Length: 92
Image 1 (cartoon, rainbow, N blue to C red):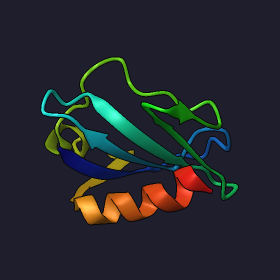
Image 2: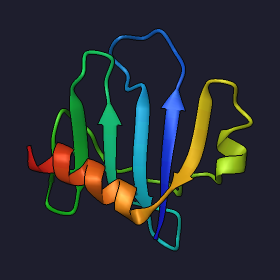
Image 3: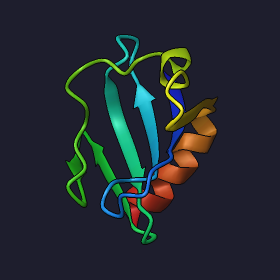
């Protein structure tokens, strides 16, 4: 698994400003968190979803490709970091 944390720089109040994903070896999302400007957090995974969040239907591009777009700033994070965020957001 690979874990990415991507900031989305925009002014739309309805779209998330941060996307944190767990990616399988095929680069498809297996779990995802979306953080919104109003402080809410949505999630999607095998066992459910909230706030209208859905897993992507196509493979996620590489971080190199994501970061070519000035609207996005992505980094790879650890499994432990992802699990901490997931347990706070998806369990709450």
